[in-house]
Image (tube, rainbow, N blue to C red; front, side, top):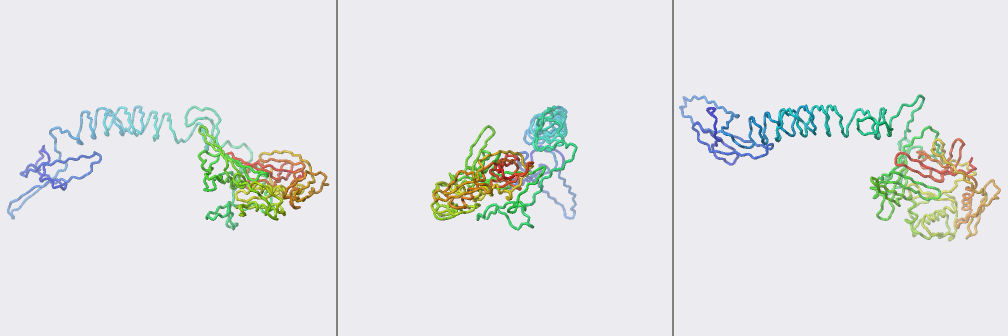
Length: 634
């Protein structure tokens, strides 16, 4: 362009649109051709305009001069920032404005300074001199209030109420959530606050304290102290008084398996053919040698890390228990147990096929297989509990899980063979094993018959010779044990299984029992006419006990064992009840174990008749055993 005269007309195009999106502009002056008008319209959101417009100016220049006299000096200048002034007001959208002196309301307008009051949202500020109550606020300084949308302002001197504002300094109290502040001079009521020092006591669990000098029952407050007793767990207390005391250190357990000293692996269950191997943690010295006594030493402190776990045998699902107990005595052939679990775990103990759900209870790393037979549900506000109970695995051989059958002696066999005969169905053995611990004897054919379950027949056979049935912890094994492993008057030569000092016992109770002092008994079988006389050694045999008869007492060995069991219970004895921890060396002291109990009165040798274990759902695990101590074992 030759001059700076503003052009008031619209843009002129040199040629019409060719469909390619390119626009060719022309010039209205200088003798050039008039370019037809063209309009460009852009309709898009303000924040989403993205594109490119290429504008070109085409001029036809013709120079007519002799070639030899050609001499020209051409200067071209393009001003991309040319401004075309608007002589008349134009009302349009998306207009760039210079300055607005009067207050105006517009959309998407960039303004410089406005002297009128503004009320804006999402505004960045610097400092607030006046009190403000705000949430997530970021302000600079607003001098006036202007109501508009998305406006960027410089300064405002008046107070503004807005949202999402970030502040530098708050000189007055603020109530807000999740705010990062530098200094707060007033009281702040916040949740989930991390503090450096708490001057008032806080009632909580698992708190590591330095010094607790006040006892205030409050939660996250800076109020005045209220002097109360503070109860908490695992708290560091006062320093011990003057004196000498050795620190109590927990025992360090050896690893389960030491490859350098142990060449074999100990399994918990038999191979099932599914490729899964169930190991048991075995440490050297856990099991004594046969005939060796487990001696519990005298200590000032006995530390045991108790653990109780309940799992479903089928899939290993964990059953969370709030309490657990189980018991066994010499007159029972299975464990009895009960537990309290959560209501949501009902599906873990309920069975759909009529068979009881098998549960594996692990008491201080020793497993026990139990059956969930009965349960009751208790619901109240905020509580849903289930009390489940049942028996051990050997309950599968009794009603209601086993049928009632007619058991007989089909031919001449021993008592051990007769038990194996009972554990069959139509001549096919069941998957149960009899661990025979009595002296075997011979039984003629047809001398015994009984109608009942498998377990009813097994207990009748064992009782005939003064024995009893004890279940295995996890396997389908039944132990047949004598009621007295040795005559009490000969216990001086008996090696006890466990030696237990009174220091390891928490509660002790003694009951004296006086029975007739029999020293002679006759036992036999009325059907065959067999009869045996059993006399206590070292006595004249002048105090007869009532005669005992049983169809299976058909041999001198059966008569001798039954007679020893009857005479051993005669006379004066003590029943000593002990409550102690489930020590790793002893585990649960089951019936049949002989225990030498040592206290200030001396040593007393007895045989365990019952055991009951209880767990309170936290850390306390205790077993209570009852020992039968005859008077002759001084």
